[in-house]
Length: 187
Ligand code: AMP
Image 1 (cartoon, rainbow, N blue to C red):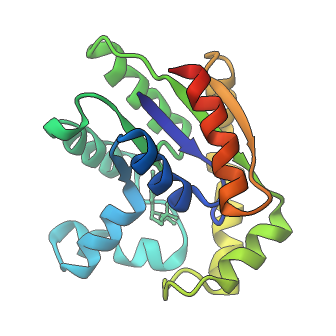
Image 2 (image 1 turned 135 degrees about the vertical axis):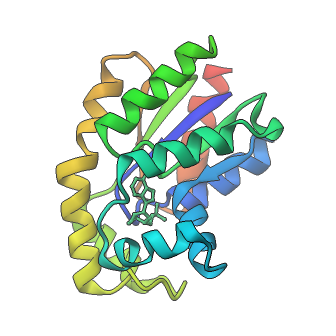
């Protein structure tokens, strides 16, 4: 199955992606994790994106698309994947769509985790991952960036008939149950 897990920062994409990975045996691909690893390992990419991640802004589309295209060529993704944090702009969604068409593949599900803004801020500020972009000021920027640049991606997928809304409020287990119900119907 090819799945996009979509939602604002703090919606629980990373947590749910890991649960889906385990339950359905599909590998997760998180662009945020890839960027953080590149920064940690001080690679060329890491140097290029460090200030961008610290500011809460988005990495340029070209860089992200190139990274994902290359990563998805890995054999471990041949039978499917869960995309977490990508696509995050309409141009990224278009580029990904092109890739699927080129490879004669289809997206099985676009899961949109729905969580109100006040709850997002609360969740991010209470998580203790030590992320440099988890401060109140940066979270505010990330939510603004989400509303302006990322939310339009929703409309792109609503037109494609794969769009599924998931209530992102409740416990981790409750949310995962909702996701499982949807994915079991999609299989
Ligand atoms: P995340 O872990 O998904 O919250 O991503 C952390 C940060 O990585 C974001 O605030 C962006 O700076 C960058 N990033 C991750 N994925 C993307 C993407 N698809 N497009 C642009 N920037 C991204």
